[in-house]
Length: 203
Ligand SMILES: [Zn+2]
Image 1 (spheres, rainbow, N blue to C red):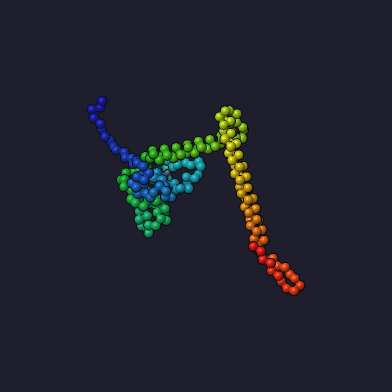
Image 2: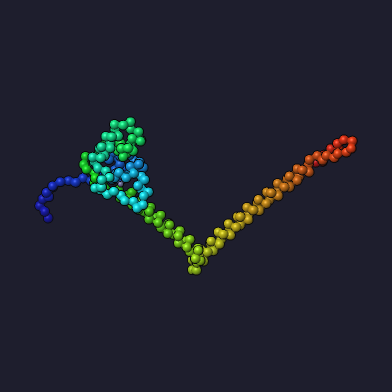
Protein backbone atom coordinates (compact mmCIF):
# COMPACT_ATOMS: atom_id res chain seq x y z
CA UNK A 1 0.00 0.00 0.00
CA UNK A 2 1.51 3.35 -0.98
CA UNK A 3 2.37 5.63 1.91
CA UNK A 4 1.32 8.71 0.00
CA UNK A 5 -0.27 9.78 -3.29
CA UNK A 6 1.41 12.37 -5.40
CA UNK A 7 -1.14 14.52 -7.18
CA UNK A 8 0.28 15.72 -10.48
CA UNK A 9 -2.86 17.15 -12.02
CA UNK A 10 -6.63 16.90 -12.25
CA UNK A 11 -8.49 16.18 -15.47
CA UNK A 12 -12.07 17.37 -15.43
CA UNK A 13 -14.96 15.75 -17.25
CA UNK A 14 -18.52 16.95 -17.55
CA UNK A 15 -21.33 14.41 -17.37
CA UNK A 16 -25.07 14.15 -16.80
CA UNK A 17 -28.20 13.76 -18.85
CA UNK A 18 -28.71 15.70 -22.08
CA UNK A 19 -30.72 18.67 -20.71
CA UNK A 20 -28.12 19.15 -17.98
CA UNK A 21 -25.19 18.97 -20.42
CA UNK A 22 -26.84 21.49 -22.74
CA UNK A 23 -27.52 23.85 -19.84
CA UNK A 24 -24.03 23.68 -18.44
CA UNK A 25 -22.48 24.22 -21.88
CA UNK A 26 -24.84 27.13 -22.66
CA UNK A 27 -26.54 25.38 -25.57
CA UNK A 28 -30.17 25.39 -26.62
CA UNK A 29 -32.26 22.22 -26.20
CA UNK A 30 -31.53 18.89 -27.84
CA UNK A 31 -34.08 19.52 -30.61
CA UNK A 32 -32.16 22.54 -31.92
CA UNK A 33 -30.35 22.53 -35.27
CA UNK A 34 -26.90 21.98 -33.75
CA UNK A 35 -28.21 19.45 -31.27
CA UNK A 36 -24.98 17.77 -30.20
CA UNK A 37 -22.96 18.83 -27.18
CA UNK A 38 -19.86 17.05 -28.53
CA UNK A 39 -19.67 18.25 -32.11
CA UNK A 40 -21.00 20.72 -34.68
CA UNK A 41 -23.01 18.24 -36.77
CA UNK A 42 -26.46 19.59 -37.66
CA UNK A 43 -29.72 17.66 -37.66
CA UNK A 44 -29.49 16.69 -41.34
CA UNK A 45 -26.39 14.66 -40.48
CA UNK A 46 -28.61 12.26 -38.51
CA UNK A 47 -30.35 11.16 -41.70
CA UNK A 48 -27.12 10.33 -43.49
CA UNK A 49 -26.24 6.65 -43.60
CA UNK A 50 -23.72 5.52 -42.67
CA UNK A 51 -23.56 8.20 -40.03
CA UNK A 52 -20.03 9.04 -38.97
CA UNK A 53 -20.05 10.95 -35.75
CA UNK A 54 -17.12 13.33 -35.49
CA UNK A 55 -15.13 11.94 -32.59
CA UNK A 56 -13.29 14.00 -30.01
CA UNK A 57 -10.26 15.65 -31.53
CA UNK A 58 -12.00 16.14 -34.87
CA UNK A 59 -11.92 19.68 -36.22
CA UNK A 60 -15.75 19.88 -35.90
CA UNK A 61 -15.82 18.95 -32.23
CA UNK A 62 -17.16 21.45 -29.75
CA UNK A 63 -14.47 22.96 -27.54
CA UNK A 64 -14.38 25.56 -24.80
CA UNK A 65 -12.93 28.11 -27.22
CA UNK A 66 -15.56 27.61 -29.93
CA UNK A 67 -18.37 27.60 -27.33
CA UNK A 68 -17.12 30.97 -26.08
CA UNK A 69 -16.65 32.28 -29.60
CA UNK A 70 -20.14 31.15 -30.68
CA UNK A 71 -21.75 32.70 -27.60
CA UNK A 72 -19.86 35.94 -28.11
CA UNK A 73 -21.05 36.04 -31.74
CA UNK A 74 -24.67 35.41 -30.62
CA UNK A 75 -24.59 37.99 -27.80
CA UNK A 76 -23.66 40.74 -30.30
CA UNK A 77 -26.75 40.08 -32.45
CA UNK A 78 -30.49 40.73 -32.11
CA UNK A 79 -30.71 37.26 -30.51
CA UNK A 80 -33.27 35.78 -32.84
CA UNK A 81 -33.55 32.04 -33.43
CA UNK A 82 -31.92 32.54 -36.80
CA UNK A 83 -28.90 34.15 -35.11
CA UNK A 84 -28.81 31.27 -32.61
CA UNK A 85 -28.47 28.78 -35.47
CA UNK A 86 -25.68 30.82 -37.00
CA UNK A 87 -23.94 30.58 -33.60
CA UNK A 88 -24.33 26.78 -33.43
CA UNK A 89 -27.12 27.25 -30.85
CA UNK A 90 -24.68 28.50 -28.18
CA UNK A 91 -26.89 31.12 -26.53
CA UNK A 92 -25.38 31.26 -23.05
CA UNK A 93 -21.79 31.35 -21.78
CA UNK A 94 -20.43 27.90 -20.86
CA UNK A 95 -20.43 27.37 -17.09
CA UNK A 96 -17.35 25.13 -17.09
CA UNK A 97 -13.91 26.74 -17.10
CA UNK A 98 -12.02 23.71 -18.47
CA UNK A 99 -11.54 22.25 -21.96
CA UNK A 100 -14.55 20.16 -22.94
CA UNK A 101 -13.19 18.69 -26.17
CA UNK A 102 -13.16 14.94 -25.52
CA UNK A 103 -14.30 15.59 -21.96
CA UNK A 104 -18.09 15.37 -22.31
CA UNK A 105 -19.22 11.97 -21.06
CA UNK A 106 -21.96 10.54 -23.32
CA UNK A 107 -25.21 10.22 -21.31
CA UNK A 108 -25.74 6.51 -20.72
CA UNK A 109 -29.55 6.77 -20.34
CA UNK A 110 -30.06 8.44 -23.71
CA UNK A 111 -27.59 6.12 -25.40
CA UNK A 112 -29.46 3.10 -24.04
CA UNK A 113 -32.82 4.51 -25.12
CA UNK A 114 -31.57 5.06 -28.68
CA UNK A 115 -29.97 1.63 -28.97
CA UNK A 116 -32.98 -0.11 -27.42
CA UNK A 117 -35.33 1.67 -29.81
CA UNK A 118 -33.17 0.68 -32.80
CA UNK A 119 -33.08 -2.91 -31.59
CA UNK A 120 -36.84 -2.96 -31.00
CA UNK A 121 -37.52 -1.60 -34.50
CA UNK A 122 -35.19 -4.18 -36.02
CA UNK A 123 -36.94 -7.04 -34.18
CA UNK A 124 -40.35 -5.78 -35.31
CA UNK A 125 -39.13 -5.58 -38.90
CA UNK A 126 -37.79 -9.15 -38.83
CA UNK A 127 -41.00 -10.48 -37.21
CA UNK A 128 -43.11 -8.84 -39.91
CA UNK A 129 -40.92 -10.29 -42.66
CA UNK A 130 -41.14 -13.77 -41.07
CA UNK A 131 -44.94 -13.52 -40.80
CA UNK A 132 -45.29 -12.55 -44.43
CA UNK A 133 -42.90 -15.30 -45.54
CA UNK A 134 -44.80 -17.92 -43.50
CA UNK A 135 -48.13 -16.89 -45.00
CA UNK A 136 -46.70 -17.01 -48.52
CA UNK A 137 -45.02 -20.41 -48.09
CA UNK A 138 -47.91 -22.13 -46.32
CA UNK A 139 -47.79 -23.42 -42.78
CA UNK A 140 -47.59 -27.01 -41.54
CA UNK A 141 -47.23 -27.30 -37.77
CA UNK A 142 -50.07 -27.41 -35.25
CA UNK A 143 -49.32 -23.91 -34.19
CA UNK A 144 -49.31 -22.87 -37.82
CA UNK A 145 -52.68 -24.57 -38.36
CA UNK A 146 -54.16 -22.50 -35.58
CA UNK A 147 -52.65 -19.49 -37.20
CA UNK A 148 -54.10 -20.49 -40.57
CA UNK A 149 -57.52 -20.92 -38.99
CA UNK A 150 -57.25 -17.48 -37.51
CA UNK A 151 -56.32 -16.09 -40.91
CA UNK A 152 -59.33 -17.85 -42.48
CA UNK A 153 -61.62 -16.48 -39.76
CA UNK A 154 -60.35 -13.00 -40.51
CA UNK A 155 -60.92 -13.55 -44.25
CA UNK A 156 -64.46 -14.84 -43.61
CA UNK A 157 -65.28 -11.91 -41.43
CA UNK A 158 -64.01 -9.56 -44.14
CA UNK A 159 -66.19 -11.19 -46.80
CA UNK A 160 -69.21 -11.23 -44.42
CA UNK A 161 -68.76 -7.54 -43.75
CA UNK A 162 -68.52 -6.88 -47.49
CA UNK A 163 -71.74 -8.83 -48.11
CA UNK A 164 -73.53 -6.95 -45.33
CA UNK A 165 -72.39 -3.68 -46.83
CA UNK A 166 -73.73 -4.68 -50.25
CA UNK A 167 -77.06 -5.87 -48.77
CA UNK A 168 -77.42 -2.59 -46.93
CA UNK A 169 -76.78 -0.67 -50.17
CA UNK A 170 -79.37 -2.74 -52.04
CA UNK A 171 -81.96 -2.26 -49.31
CA UNK A 172 -81.41 1.48 -49.30
CA UNK A 173 -81.79 1.64 -53.10
CA UNK A 174 -84.98 -0.45 -52.94
CA UNK A 175 -86.46 1.74 -50.18
CA UNK A 176 -85.70 4.85 -52.21
CA UNK A 177 -87.33 3.32 -55.28
CA UNK A 178 -90.49 2.36 -53.33
CA UNK A 179 -90.71 5.78 -51.68
CA UNK A 180 -90.42 7.49 -55.07
CA UNK A 181 -93.08 5.19 -56.49
CA UNK A 182 -95.40 5.95 -53.62
CA UNK A 183 -94.85 9.67 -54.02
CA UNK A 184 -95.58 9.45 -57.75
CA UNK A 185 -98.88 7.73 -57.07
CA UNK A 186 -99.95 10.68 -54.85
CA UNK A 187 -99.50 13.25 -57.63
CA UNK A 188 -102.80 14.52 -59.14
CA UNK A 189 -103.64 12.73 -62.35
CA UNK A 190 -104.49 15.11 -65.16
CA UNK A 191 -106.78 14.01 -67.92
CA UNK A 192 -107.41 16.14 -70.93
CA UNK A 193 -110.82 16.28 -72.50
CA UNK A 194 -112.02 18.16 -75.50
CA UNK A 195 -113.89 20.67 -73.38
CA UNK A 196 -111.19 21.40 -70.76
CA UNK A 197 -109.06 19.82 -68.02
CA UNK A 198 -110.29 17.45 -65.34
CA UNK A 199 -108.11 16.93 -62.33
CA UNK A 200 -108.53 13.66 -60.46
CA UNK A 201 -106.86 13.63 -57.11
CA UNK A 202 -106.51 10.52 -55.04
CA UNK A 203 -104.81 10.01 -51.66
ZN1 LIG B 1 -21.97 14.98 -32.20
